[in-house]
Amino acid sequence: MHFKDITGYEIERKLIIKIKQQQNITLLTSHFAVDLITEHQLKRPKSKEKLTCYGAYVFNQKNQEIVTYNAKTTLLATGGIGQVYRNTTNPIIATGDGIAMAYRAKAQVSHMEFIQFHPTALAHQFSHGRSFLISEAVRGLGAILKNEQGEAFMHKYDARKELASRDIVSRAIDNELKISGADFVYLDCTAISKKDFKQNFPNIYAQCIEIGIDLSKQMIPVTPAAHYLCGGIDVDTNGCTSVQHLYACGECAHTGLHGANRLASNSLLEALVYAHRCFIATKKDIETIKHKISIPDWDGKNTFETKEQILITHNRKELQSLMSDYVGIIRTHERLLRASKRLNVLFEETEDLYQKSKLSTQLFELRNMISTSYLIVEQSMKRVENKGGFYNSDLI
Ligand SMILES: Cc1cc2nc3c(=O)[nH]c(=O)nc-3n(C[C@H](O)[C@H](O)[C@H](O)COP(=O)(O)OP(=O)(O)OC[C@H]3O[C@@H](n4cnc5c(N)ncnc54)[C@H](O)[C@@H]3O)c2cc1C
Image 1 (cartoon, protein in one colour):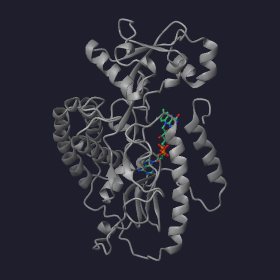
Image 2 (tube, helix red, strand yellow):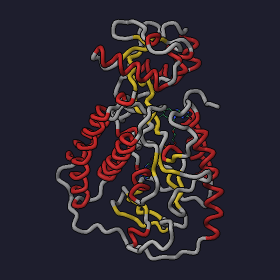
Image 3 (cartoon, helix red, strand yellow):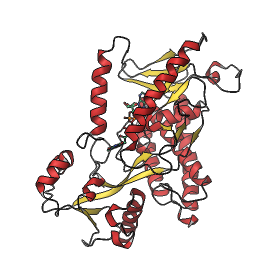
Image 4 (cartoon, helix red, strand yellow):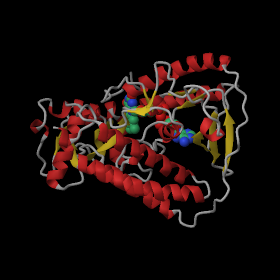
């Protein structure tokens, strides 16, 4: 199932049209969910085995105020975590917000070490903070990976060459880059006719033209980039998390369907199936929920306008560098330990800012990115066997 080379975009486009036609759906744009409301915020001891979710605190970015949403059921569908890395195909919003919120609410989060790096992202940083993806279908049609010297290299790593799985091709490119010290390798598409390329990959073709690459003569500079998180918030087959009345679906959820290494094109299918399952389960859940509780307003006293927004930007860049350098495609015990130590410093500095500063989306995101990174590092350290998207060279 696909729609040209923009399947996800097309699903979203059609969904938004439908949603806008529904009288009983209120769509709130410019609203950023900050934290889930559980017994912790209510300062009530948990009465049952499981914690309960009563809604969320949400930041209205227009008037800069936090709104309290008291909800019978709450669904997290906040997407991936790619922004914790320097190079990612993920959109700028992929800061692990839902995962961090769930973690703070004590929901179970697992398999965060399984991050899929896509081998061929265009090595051209766009201003919107993400790398453009060159689909592996381009390699399927005959494109060849070449190093700085213009030599094909995949035969050295796997008999399937360019058609090996994403983790193998990413590690091969990573190794070539380490040998040469270059920032990227090349994808040679000159064997594919212009007509075939344009017909199969209109979006990729247009993007290459935009940055001045003539595919019939020039090669595309490519580099691996963080692409998909196989782990996340643990859910059952109905999308229920370990916290009562809290659901999750899409990339922030860990359904287990992708194992340690997702096969291409499966995540949109998973997101659609689980969104539907969450809907059915939530509908039943809502009918049985009686709770009516009073929720305290967000406590924002003792905060001031930060004069140094740059501190947030610096910490974000530092986080992306440390995750890319120490928790990337190939990890080691030593690198993970270094990442853990540096994360602790970033955590303390950012928590201090968070306690004192006026509300800002950038600060909320940074805080979430640090929690998400902490989970990736911690769960990577616990893994004792290489599998799928996880590779620690000390475990060979
Ligand atoms: C370049 C690229 C190509 C891909 N191609 C394919 C493909 O061909 N087939 C396939 O199956 N998969 C593909 N994937 C993976 C797939 O697109 C994603 O896994 C999927 O889009 C995730 O959907 P989602 O609904 O979970 O998250 P998203 O689509 O990322 O949506 C998350 C939403 O939550 C919002 N949000 C986030 N945080 C907050 C917050 N704190 N408060 C309020 N709102 C928030 C965001 O603004 C966004 O609207 C691709 C991914 C990329 C990056």
